Image (cartoon, rainbow, N blue to C red; front, side, top):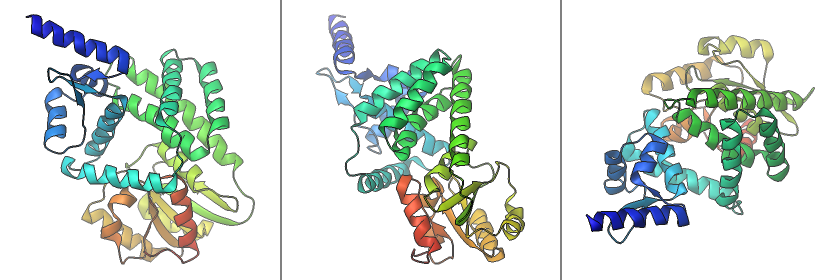
Length: 315
């Protein structure tokens, strides 16, 4: 009895002093049961908690974010055995793209303030934070490293009482701001690219943010509405005559969808590219086709898009 109490006190002390979470708290925060958390650690090495002297697992905030990332991939249909290589590849891409990245502790502080504002449904405070974050970091960091992780976290916690209301509050706020930025960035002349979502494979905010990431000084991105039929894109492109069409998806594509993409590329008079997490997962399957894979992060997507439009990107 004494040993059990001592272990509990030790875990509690570590949690308070080092911001380490016992497994039951991680389970509550993420919705993943302890048995699954242990399996992800033992069988796949996806998370690596520290241990107390008595063997109790303690998880850092980085571990909690890793669990949420794993969960988001498995919910998209990716086998858990493949998640480790995907996360490692994404981390390597981000490190190469932003070698002097801001310490995650700074982003965590901003995220904590965002959660408080959302929890209080305080739009004035949320607007203040939004402006402060944008004045501190470039656009890619603002969305990828600060705003979207909180949005994704709330998305995964909608089963909790009040969770859906909080997510809807933040989602509506961010969609309005992203759309506003896209409208301000529209160019009257220069190259134009159309961006559309693969049906049912992303949410509107993710599509709008992708549009912001792809936009550049002389490149205008027109985002087509969610629900745009894939089979009508050739018609839309024929009327609007863009330099390229980008399809955005965060869901792995099966063989039937890959054949559909190939048929679409043959029907278009412009270049076709794929962006989002599906572009990372489908690169090998699309090798040798005219469809380019732009990736899913920040400046990488914009750079690859420009290379593709200039005929400099291998497909």
